[in-house]
Length: 164
Image (tube, rainbow, N blue to C red):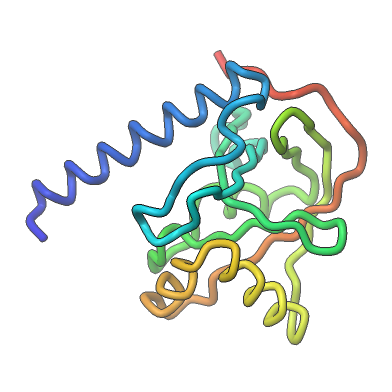
């Protein structure tokens, strides 16, 4: 793939993600929770949440939309970064704090998180691949073990607002 083609694809993805996040925030979660990602190997009705955390270097509040699954009352997100050889920034940022917040549709929660290990990790990974099949290819394209983050809601909070 040429550098120009890659840059065009990256720009289109950035634009789509920005529009998706804006729609999710503007609507208070009434829009943006379900997205069609069938064109990239996912499901037509793919669920997304908003993850809110603090930047480890900037100290700024950041909101990132992510695919998610729900297992036994815990909400799971995958730090895949499309199979890149390095972790996504959001994962590095949450590693600095055990507490964060997430919003699913019109409900938001303060939460704590953990990473599953061993047999539990295998079971959760298989489930998340069923939620978003491209994760399998992402893992095959990198030597790093893609982290799984399991979030447990602590208490309901107000839905997220756009960050100025």
